[in-house]
Image 1 (cartoon, rainbow, N blue to C red):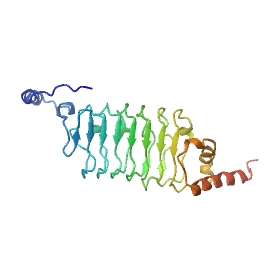
Image 2: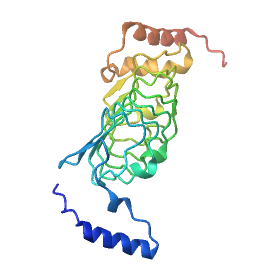
Image 3: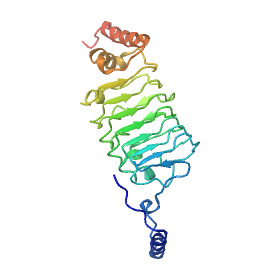
Image 4: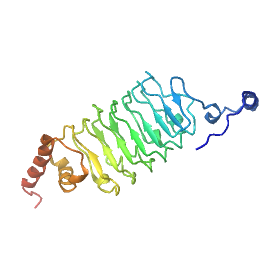
Length: 241
């Protein structure tokens, strides 16, 4: 994609003066450049990895297609700034200090295909967090040591999702009702979680056994634990009658 020529400094000054006189706040589209400590190339890739950033970068080009902010100390993804990037297809936020995300975080990123939120400090994934991401193909949610809850409908609307990895978190259970309904899902990472051995994980156990080809390699101990849950549930007497 060819970028349009940048406006001259004089024309920008005149435009800002006009907006100031009219009492209008300039849109980010007029102020977008390349953030400090980042590199922007003509392929619409913005590389900000490993720059010790503590806040989401400002002045991002609105046409950005790939944004890499990994290996920093960013604690928040501001929805207002992020959602101006409506052409974004690749977002790497791994190895930061993110504790919270919500549906509004990604509300306007309908073209986003790759999202990496691994190695953060997320606590939970709420209902419809990823709902707006209609084009999402790969989601990495690994290595969030305090992530103990994923809402049953967190991925319910991600019909294009092919790869989901929730390995090495603090999950003890995972409701798979919405995952089963995802037509494109072909790979699911579950390893490294402290799965509970109770009936709440029975559906997960059965799914692992039936759709084993979809699952990234589980350690033998984890596989045995899940199978133990399944067999224990099968042996429980039916007391409903």
